[in-house]
Image (cartoon, rainbow, N blue to C red):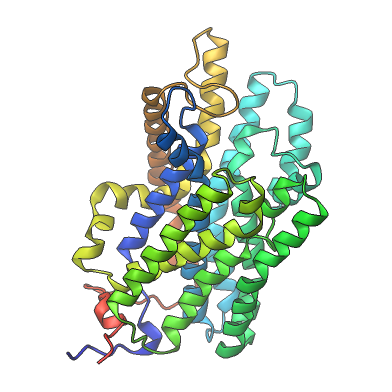
Length: 397
């Protein structure tokens, strides 16, 4: 069977609809682990809810793949650094800082007694070092609206340095550097666990300990651009199924929560490998019936607004709690995060999605349109019909 051979430099440019579906799955897992009710649920539901933290690992792999692809496709451009950092800033900064300002404003309006401490704590997040502060303090941020921000700190710290490596290293050198990062991440976490077993956030929220997911995504982006990849569909399918099954077996053995010792050491690496294999499967069957479920409209929409959902979730939660307390209404959240019932969980998710939709329509999308206008010499390749996985991964003859 003959396949269209695409020019190497454009093989993976353009929008990949299935990745929006994966983003939707990732953010739904995060919402489940944060707000799913603990009370009156069966053992299986408790297990599914408890592993929702792996949604962040899926985000890391996706981010590594997409951002590295952008860097590789533009590495020869004269304004490579300027365009990359400008476009990242326009996408990430506006809503990020809006949430910080709104969170502090809500606390001031409700005369929160911890506002002085929260101002100091928030200052670390303003400069994308909040994850470092949390590790030193050995406690998540007291300002609950900052709770999900640690993963953004990791990503931005990674991309502060990574563009220089992509620009200046040869492809083979970059490839083996990323392989070393993946291989060494697990032993590094294990060693740090032996030194400080009580510091749970050390492995969970710091860049050196969570680079394997980003590096695996980057490896995929690099490998598919080095040459056409002759890989059999059955090999991809069996590999993804095996690694995903292995992840859930390891979770059942090592503990479902992110802070269990076995998860803190090698569990994150297994999650990253499983999701990298899933991403490869999606790319291999891109545009086919096998990945059609990732292209359905609800998942596509949730994936498109997933950044807003992720950033706004804790802010909306905090606002609901304060309003319900102020007016003497029985809150539908309990403890620090969780909903009291599945009905309340669904209502909370609807409110978060509506808020993220408003953010997308009136803040994120208008600002994102500026990226192409303000990027100088930035080439964007668009297709009426993006190439399918069969064209990107020709079957071995």
